[in-house]
Length: 255
Image (cartoon, rainbow, N blue to C red; front, side, top):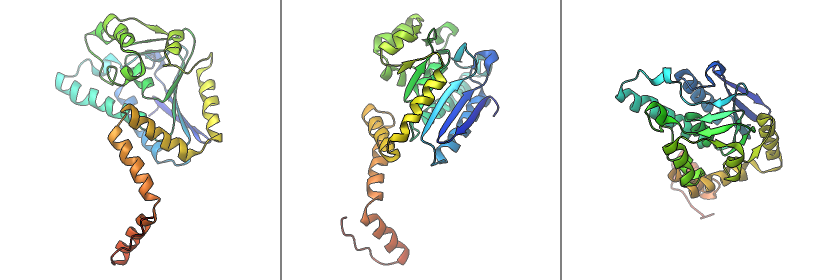
């Protein structure tokens, strides 16, 4: 898992893409490592925030490594490469704690889709965003036409997808896609993460569920998570479980 490093500093987890020779292009081992790290993060109740960044100064992630998928059959490409990546990106998007993408450089294709799975983004000046899949004869596979379309105005996504245009950091911030532009994106992201110390962890988590339910990010699961959290705090839930274990009829109070 050396291609994706997980470093935990107090209550903040930092995930770093480490494939600088290929501009942090995503490979199968990197996707598998990211998936495994997300499992660890999800189970760590002490964490308050996750930061995702890349190694080097040129690129956050230039997308998927063509060498990793170029030889695949159409069936394997659709069933495994696209669907596995989509599932892993969805896991990142649906973490219960806030997530920040620290864009240390360009984010193209799958890199832009990966950044879009985070809650907010910080970007270095001079970096650009792009969805250039048509240049190699493919289309977006990891939510470039879905989640990204919820974060940018439709004409801007069409600029990137249909015309291959790049979006500079300043324009991305003006459009609301980027929260801050900073020379040191990781340091800026860490500063933002530190602000969570003044906030209620539970209120932040429930707020994220509510926002995702409103925007359509796994709406069904978010609605049920909110309902389950509410019922789990009730006296009826305690009584129901206790009665079941005691093998007696429950006496619900409605409290």
